[in-house]
Length: 271
Image 1: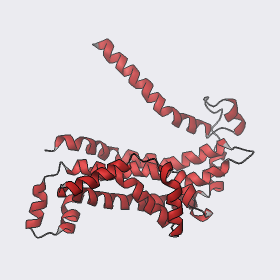
Image 2 (image 1 turned 90 degrees about the vertical axis):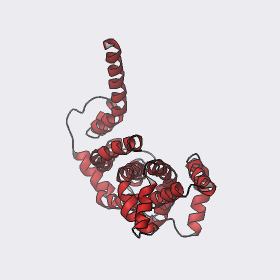
Image 3 (image 1 turned 45 degrees about the vertical axis):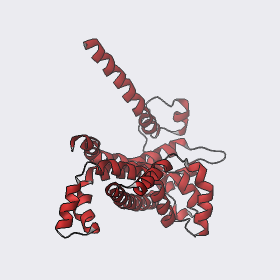
C-alpha cells in the first residue's frame, strides 16, 4: 500500500513538472541575451538581464496594447456571463422539447472547429462593417456561449425551482427573479466561466489577426508577432513580452481558484 502511494506521488510530481516546464522555458529565456538563448534553451541564465523587458515594453507599446486586450477581454466576459447565464436559466426552467433542441444545438456548436467558419464569418462581419473591437466582442459572445451555457445549465439543475416560485409569490417578474435570486447563487460557476473565457480571449491570436486591421486596436498577442520578421526572430524579446502578458492572468487565477473549486464541487453537494 505504501509502495503504491509512493509510485502515485512520483507520477504526480512528474506530470506536475511537465505542466510547469513551459513556464520555466518562457521565464528563464526571457532573461537571456539572444546568443545565450540559442546556445542553451534549458539552462538557467548566467545573469538576470532586465533589458529584454525594458525593450519589449517600449517596442510593444505595452500600456496601449494592454488597454486594448483588457477592454476586449473584460467586455467579452461580461456579455458572455450575462447572456449565457440568462439563456441557460430559461432553457433549464422551460424544460420542453424546443428548449432541449436549443440546448443540444449549443452543445453541437462546440464540435465545429473555428477554421471551418472563419472565412465566411470574416466576409459576413466585413459586410456589416464589424471588423473592429465591437465586432470581435460580438464574435467572442457567439463562440464562448456554447460551453458557458452548458456549464451554467448543469449548475442551475442543482438550484431548487421553489426559489423561483417563492420570488414569483413575492411579486418578482422574470428579470427581477434572475437579478435578485438566481444570479447571486451563480457566483462560483460565473467565476469559473469568466476564468475559462479570459484565458482563451486574452491569449487568442487567430481571431484578432483576421478581424483587427488597424495597429491602434492591436492586442498583446498580435503585437508580439512583430518580433518575428522575415529574416530575424527576436525570441528573447518575444518571451519577455509573453511574460508581461501572462502575469495578469496568473494573478487573477490565484484570486479566483477558490471559487473555481467551489463551482466544481457545488453540483455534487446540493440536492
